[in-house]
Length: 276
Ligand code: F6R
Image 1 (tube, rainbow, N blue to C red):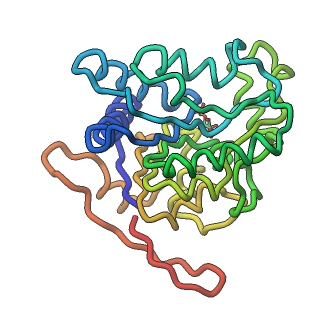
Image 2 (cartoon, rainbow, N blue to C red; image 1 turned 135 degrees about the vertical axis):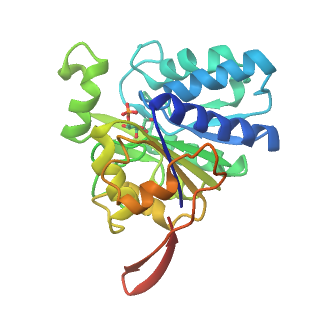
């Protein structure tokens, strides 16, 4: 796991966009796993800018979104379908047939979930997965006490998530109670993952994700076991991390690479060495 601590939300967004753009330059037909929410908005704005200014090409990109609310139509401004078109898809040259977002109003929900995982597999798996994190350390909509082996499935949103997301809706009662989400297994099968977080309200979740023990009540902690994760956090989201990590991982304009820190974990009797 590599951690980059930035000074601001803007810097976090630029760094994340550079990683995604780099991925597309290296592999123009990349399969991207995409997140919604306020955290990646700045990253998408940067990607749109790079597309418009120097022609970053999305024509061969295939995308899979992490999740969608159950019960909202695509036209609903709070649907993740709407969000993705507003912030990214309507402004770049991605082909509509290459865009995949779980259908929040399927005839057969179980079938929809199975189809989604099969399609990801058929496209060769996710090359780069972008993640935000909930205040309760959820990733996608995998709420605390999720089964780590879950694939795409129906989830009941936590009260905390409903409260946090109420800011996007007129009334808290309007927030859907259920969603379809890629499972932890689906996410962990991605070849590379970037996790973004900004703000003091994410500091505890980031601490648990990076430094806590790996446990289902902190779903993001499973990322410690993935071989290629870059965590990009602003200094507020990093504020609860131990000083030594922050010191080494802060972006220093004169120093190319943050130092590498390792940590041991013991999970169910196995020793694991993680690179922080
Ligand atoms: C959204 C998603 C969620 C969000 C998380 C943080 O697709 O998967 O896990 O990333 O709820 O949301 P924001 O960025 O709005 O704080």
